[in-house]
Image (tube, rainbow over all chains, first blue to last red; front, side):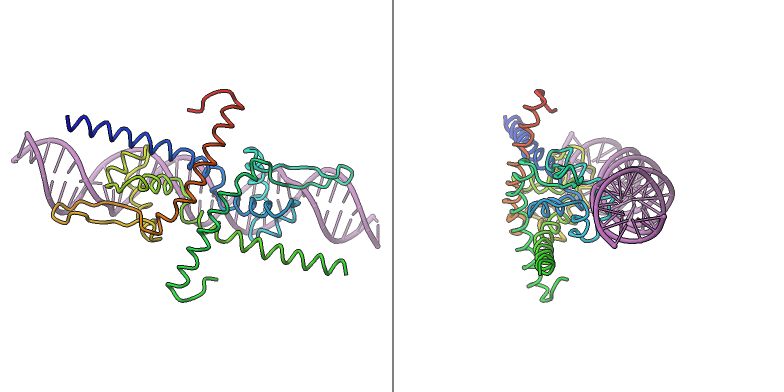
Length: 128
Length: 128
DNA sequence: ACCACCACTATACTTTTTGATAGTAGTATA
DNA sequence: TATACTACTATCAAAAAGTATAGTGGTGGT
């Protein structure tokens, strides 16, 4: 009796966990690399050209920028637009899907800022 | 004149971007690996013993679990407690700091769930 | 014609992360 | 005493992620 109940609970917990874990891992798989969030944040400000992004995101190489933009395009978070076909001006911007990430990014930003403040206070020195 | 204004704006944008990017990257650095969020989600349900986590999180190896728990402990998101010293029962749970991540995780979960639904609709088949 | 800028791509390499497998020390159980 | 479970650790290998460096094809200006 007791064993059976315990088992059922365990299975329930397990399934609930999975249901909660899966979408969260999807998000990490999509935007959890070193450069994807910086790119998305920059594009959240305004559309950017390739070289603008290169300059905006310190340290990124064109190879990484290119790859990450392609990944983000593949996942429909970013769109590549040739805004002025005569001049071949390429711009990158967020899709609606990409814009809908704003709440996630904002939550991270707030938490990250708080965390950084706490660390700074505790250690009583400035980080960077 | 125009050039000067443009430059100033560019600098402003750049600085604002950095201010927004940094905390977001901090978060990714802390929880952006394959197993950290699954662990945090599981611990959000309840405290877990080491082997409980192993069973709960399908696919994780004890090596990874051990390492990731240590990382999370190091960053004060998770605490290790010997709840019953006589029996040496070890449990892992969220710290207050870890619990404060809930909003981030919730935002990710909601977004991830929506995204998955959209993909499923578009492709008109079930994922997994 | 020459040089610069834009939007990338190619190649090779290093570093980081993760996995597979086995093992250990301690306690409990039959 | 043998077996099993808990909470891990060690070693090595593979895979993934990221870096360094150079180069390409196109357009635009002088």
